[in-house]
Length: 364
Ligand code: MRU
Image 1 (tube, rainbow, N blue to C red):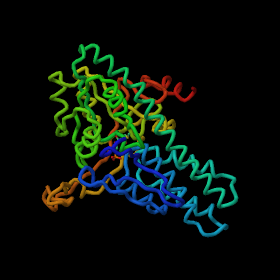
Image 2 (tube, rainbow, N blue to C red):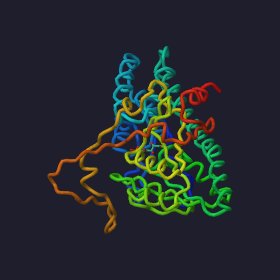
Image 3 (spheres, helix red, strand yellow):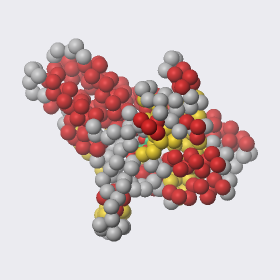
Image 4 (cartoon, rainbow, N blue to C red):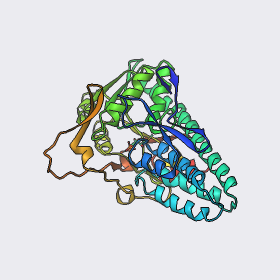
């Protein structure tokens, strides 16, 4: 995607042993690129949310395995340290299943390789291939999802289609295109008038900071709303579809996504607004069938709720917005049961949130 007229992706291999990422903690105020040279750097980038969003977490972990091998200085014992690094990276964030998916894929590809140099080459190849595939998959989500927007546009006789989204499931959360944003960008590029309601997404404001910034860079009309506004807009007929991403979706179609998504789904159902989740197959956890019971929900530090980040006098600053001693609960995600999901938009097409239909996606 373009940033100030220059093409960017969220992560790239700069040179041997050096991976670079866009630091998302300071956007939209500052555009900073960070170097990752060790597996600790990759762990840090994921856990501190320098990078974030399910597909990008997976790709970063995959490069993290490559960096582990680049750090190795001895031909002996690297397999053992690789395993340690893999289980450490796995713990960086619990909800997005893309993390385990990417690490398992690396471990499988590296199995049986004896020489360190060969393992390094293979790990880089696997990480680059995952990155390439995630880009292509997001592009395909755009191709499949745009027909849903096109249909709404027809029904509205060309009036702008109002799409509500939550958090950031944009190109910043992936490598390029985004998941939820891919059909939006595609529609905009095809000349279909769209307008996006952007939930601010407390406490880290991924919507207000990141989605709004992305849409602005691409010239897509949008309006930021406080998190609790969606229900009112739906009652007033001002939302034509809800379109979100996912961090983990069960084989039965339960969708885990940023905290607050479930409330939007409830309001959507009550107001007969279609609710879509866009995701790559790497986000589907084929081992789980009850998302509410089984998807691990990340709990993060209380300071994310207690402090608000903003920009003043040329600096990114944090200010306390609660009584200093009040206890805080900071749940990062919630699960929207399949019954509230109209359809899933994937790289293999649009499908019902049902086991039979999801199983089929993996067959072709
Ligand atoms: O905590 P975050 O910012 O990593 O959460 C991101 C989301 O919830 C996204 O909606 C999800 O990862 C979809 S990514 C295309």
